[in-house]
Length: 489
Image 1: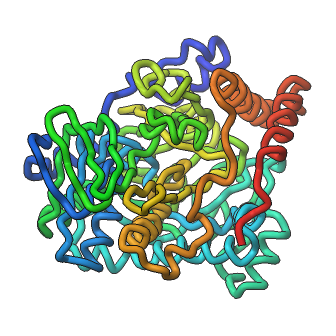
Image 2: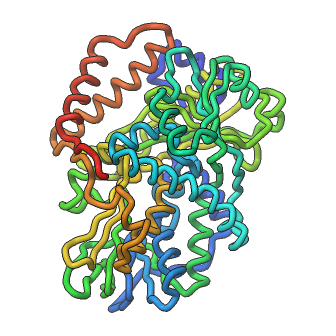
Image 3: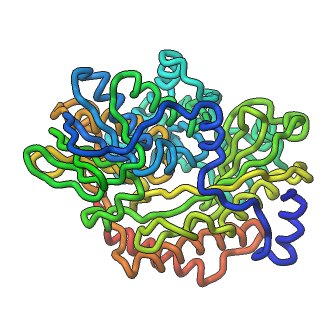
């Protein structure tokens, strides 16, 4: 599909705009598997024993296994994954290994000032640390540590507020966000929409599925046992908890639950987060990309609307873009059309046409989606069951690349019973906000997402959002205020 079709059909009949079929696997994962399918990891069968059993082969589980092996190479570690490593959100996201400096004021509101700054600093340090990890393991992940432009694509898009800059200044991080005017933004990527923005150097773009597969390789080389095609049916507590799978049982000293959105099937987590879907598309290679857009670097780009667009260059000079809309999964049941809805893929495709009309004639080659576990505060949580034998790290809310690196250290400390800088981070504990129960959750959260999307479209056209959209957002704001905690200090 060409960009001209995006623009033309939007005017005539936006509901019928075609995009490439939404694939079961992400374009990232298909590329990674072509490059290196890796050695087989057969499903678990029979009675298995481990010191630690990690449920979920995405980034949270892989980084937890990696960190545990770093600290205690003698531990027997087993990872069970329902599909293959990289098949979930870990292989389907935008590949932004990012900090949270632009959200610092919100972090401090939720976690207290010291806690919010500590968590943001831990995320930013993980971005720097990734360079060393890639070099140490000769990891082929197509990574560029060049930062990101958060662009204001219109006067109606706000940048970070004064409180964010005050906090950065007060805590010695004033150089981590730099404001740019329209010329400065367009010098990075020449969108006629850009009127300014902010830049941070603390971001790496990479090929996310390749990172997941390289983590898999490193863990296998270290003797960690990974069993793909092994969904958890249930976990049974006790002094040595048991993970029951279709063809076997893993008995372990400790169990770590890191299934992401799929944890919604468990009763304990049903009000911990909403399950949402985000969609991405990728263009064909654009050999003259730098000439057409002035985008000569591998800096990431995102705009600052409510349902933001995020985009980046790939190793072969395509553009991958996501955002603009979001789907909500009723009851957290991840199956069927919730992962293949073409309307949501069209929203991402339209975003590229809107931001860069000079890409007229460029075709899209693939579309895909990823399920996300989004908490009421968009913060992850890490909790342990009574007795300290079962632990969970969930709710990465679409910010999982960096959050799971920090989360792996948190979970390792919880498993080992260590009181340290990781176990004391203020995201340790149950979710700060419970999401609404079903059957209220789906209509409330979906209507809120639609209201944000409608508001963005209205502002694009120079209009005020309609009264219904404003009313929905006000209602959700009151719900969140009534159900939020005051913060963790």
